[in-house]
Length: 89
Image (cartoon, rainbow, N blue to C red; front, side, top):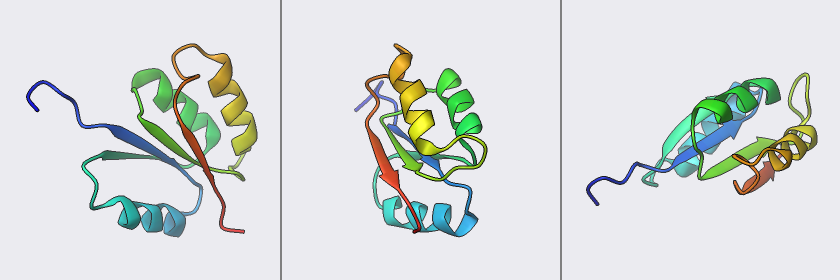
């Protein structure tokens, strides 16, 4: 549709292989994939972009995924973004 932006999905995972695996699973969808290696990086990206979905590793460096989700829910601009927790464990 004209005028509609492609939905953005944020992949948050410190492991390059994990991010690549998630990218390959989502490759057939009409979405723009944005990647972050840490919870802090993810939160910064959420300030600058609107996301349709966040795929969030439970164990991110510095700040774990649970803390990232809690901070997302406290902020009006990000509280309604769906979160799917992922883990390599």
